Image 1 (cartoon, rainbow, N blue to C red):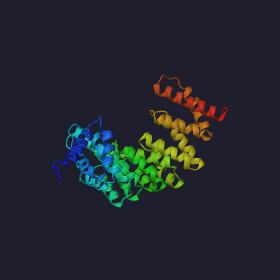
Image 2: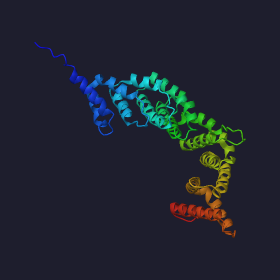
Image 3: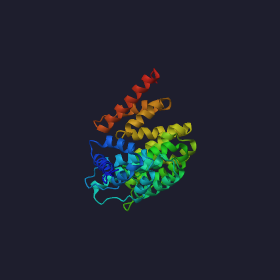
Image 4: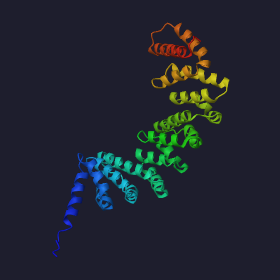
Length: 323
């Protein structure tokens, strides 16, 4: 019986071809399916691709590798990748690398594995890429709250952190109240932009999650906040949770803010007044009468009148009668 010394070559050629197709933007999807069909034998090829760097920032082939590795339950490779991940110095390359890191983190979050959570928590503190924060939020672990709070300051990862808090629900409320009230000032003595971003998002989440009277008692003074968006959110919390006298106080403050805020805060205030027109109608009608008596061509006045008329029109249409 003759033995062909090159019998293993077709298999090696197969995986060489697979590696090339995985790197192809045109054939990547089919190559992923072929990788999964090949089973564990494809893992070394997928690992090699995952750990590659791409100076052009092209990330799709590596995210395809993440997809295939997850389907093959090769989570050990993904854990290794996330633990060893370091940001590239070049911003274009780093952007692509972060996309791959995010994909790997999301895959790890599906495992429910304790080791995976520890890895995600560790990387989130140093590299809060949106996918990492999203993955951490999916774990629904109270231990992740500090990392999610920190991510609220980030333009990119903030939305992922918000979604994480939504999934936690009321369990996250105490931490969100603290985050909403924690004002960080810079060298100028003014609040830093990142602090404002964090507090705006925290107040928005508190309102969205359904603030209680206990929450309102803690944030009540924020209706006087120097940031109009935060003041408006605090007022909306008060309207939903305060007693009648305090609700009227919040209504008066909302009318004051409505005079000067820009869209979309203006629209949010209008919607709040429409939804709570039982108490707001007197405030709105009186404000419209007073501002109409002022003879001025100021844009701010015209916009205020337009908002008041919009509130009255929509509330009347909803309630079926003039208040």
